[in-house]
Length: 591
Image (tube, rainbow, N blue to C red; front, top):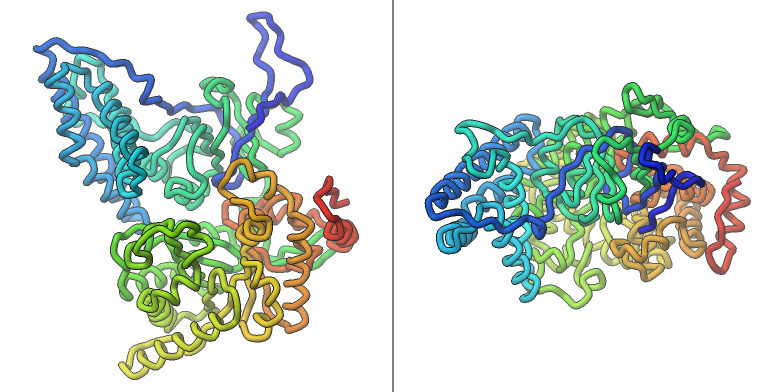
């Protein structure tokens, strides 16, 4: 990632001169904008010194370990109760797993042996056990061991942060180490899942980290909490000091360090309350600058995001990703579990349109009842609707769960088939849906009579066959991020490929125009979703290509609404046509 200055003048060498503004770049985990002071939370396990204790101090270190474990367990239990009371059930399994990991006999025995046998201080012992286990899991390349190593690191870091008392003293009985950071932008090397969950209800306005996955559980929950977040920011801990003013524009992957007033004015930041002066909710009707209506619905993956979409006044849930329950449990969720979750989604949506995208699961997720082993190329193997048709029990459970949950729902409901290739898959799902509906009727169970069945166009084959899909599907949905990935043969999670996704490639625009034309000719409903939908340069291209229904995350909805209102589709169309006609990307200018 690049590190550049926002000012043409370098900082004065005089000791009293204030540091110059800086611009740091990273990869967006959760879009949005935030302003505040830098609040630090970072600890490098490798930097923890190995401290030796005298023989008569060993018992005290063991007592500190027990106290740290008790505090950490209590924190997780309180977090679980808080999230459970708020109706957010999705993360509870993860929290339960972390509570169990705090009791891990191997982990505890290894730490105790280092303290007893080598008279090692507690902090150094915990760090050594975590690093050793992490190194072994990488050498053997076992996914189960890697997952366990991540869980151990997570709970180990929690225990370390709770060792706030002086090194020679155990934490006071009943004391609870502070967990929530102060109001501001949280700066860290990396955040664990439980730390992210602990941000719920806190005063944290944004998160910036040096390391972290764009697709892991921590990232998923950051998005659900609507906390703007950036990861992969090189030199973050060197360039940012505690208390520095930070302007985080996570949608564009930018962190402005010590921004000047001119920049704050540009983003309409009110220094008094730290937020944009823009409206906090969407308008009832969203139109482009030249008056064309545009629908902004939500793309969600968990209940908190649906709640956020409703609170913002978004026009329904245009796409709800249903993978989370399958990823949280080792065993396949039952029909009742799925039904209860889908009912919760519908309850949060309060009568607006909801489209459930069927679970998009591939062998990289190592779900044993779906795949017996990891395929050489998971994305091109048994994935999406292909994987569900290969596992009809899982598919039938999803269909039955949706039919049951939506039986008395007043709003419009649909299901979307991920990664379709041809219409045979659509027909096969329709047939299974008919059979599940018939079985419920035979058993005198309540079910929904009509559900719209659509497809997600994200494979090259589906683009070539878009007119066939438009003839048979009730609606078309474009998964823009995946479509770009497959058309450009560029991994969207690979940082070096990030430039490929900043502005839509001309060939991608041509594919989108082809899809929009097919939908218009057949009068088939059309929507598009993905992180790339909300990028400032892409919104004019999508509107000019013919898309009038954008599905975006609630965290990015206000920014996208602003972009739509600023865009004159009539004026953007000639520039978009020129762009689509290029043989290779050039500098995009929507004017």
